[in-house]
Length: 130
Image (cartoon, rainbow, N blue to C red; front, side):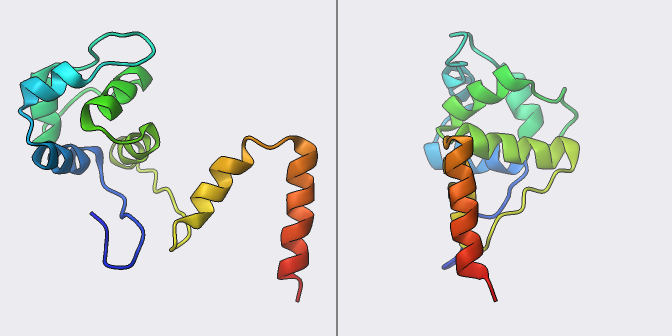
């Protein structure tokens, strides 16, 4: 869910699953069929696991392969699924700027060379100097 005029709010994986299942109009069986890990080509979850997760019953926390498959099945980014799983299973609250722009900048910065990151840091320091 997105508050009016703001960035997407963090959702636990159970909440995200319920939201996407409803939005996509899929049964647990169909969502499980679509939850294919793109790296292994294997179905990563069973419908019963999805049902238990959605109803917040005890489930074994998902591994990376399961998260990749869930991202495919829910038709969302892997990062969104990882954030939701981290919040639910590990108590990790990912904090980003209110506009959401900081996350995009950080993700892009990872593709820069060390020299480019240093240049960017100096540029930001120049803009933020008091």
